[in-house]
Image 1 (spheres, one colour):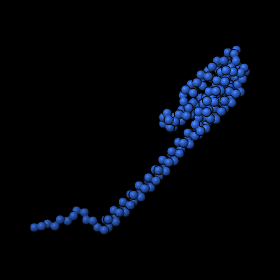
Image 2 (tube, helix red, strand yellow):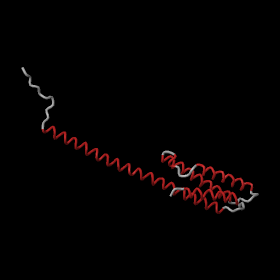
Image 3 (cartoon, helix red, strand yellow):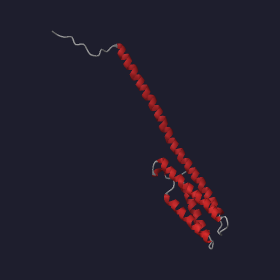
Image 4 (tube, helix red, strand yellow):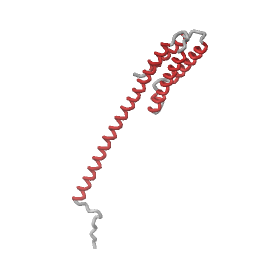
Length: 160
């Protein structure tokens, strides 16, 4: 009258050993995976800092070269003044592009090394200098000093 009910799954000692081995293998794989993932996260964080440092150093070098070119500009218009001013414009454009690259790599405005207002001011100074050189009737000393001041301020604003 009573039926003997047999369990559907019979748990044997061999099945328990297999399950434990599988569980240990999964745990070991997860541990290794988390260690590898942690390594890449730490390395990626260091990479971003190194990239920002390299961009900042290149901007500093370009600003120093631009300041040097402005120093060589005389207060009186000479035959090579427009060529020197063109090199200064190239350095400013290069720094502007590096700043844009820094923003792109950081994924937002947090990567901005220099504010856009500084570049707008520098481009305006360059236009003023170019107009004075083309007229070649007035002294460029005031415009040159202003350009040099703005370049020095940009250089000082760069992060260390």
